[in-house]
Image (cartoon, rainbow, N blue to C red; front, side, top):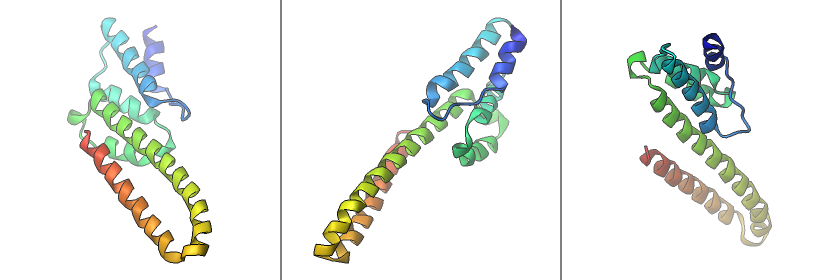
Length: 140
């Protein structure tokens, strides 16, 4: 049972189509079970297992987190960083979808109002994105 739990912790690959928090909690829970069986995994070791379980769209975050000194790594810190990144990626996807929908409407208006209106929409999109990113980062 102990070998199986350790294997599951270090061979987990997260699924891209499911929320990350329950998947990370599963690894954290298995580490806790090992602890109750007197087989301790350090917080930094569990953190590294979680980082390596991330999929490729998180490659930049993986690189950053893996460069963190081992004494500063903890599973809770890693989970918080990953959840912030997940929210950011979800927002960007939603925002890009809304922007593409807006572009379709903008083409019709551009014929009537000229190019200036499209450029104004582009500036407003970047301003809104900066505001949301700032709010997300302020929540840390």
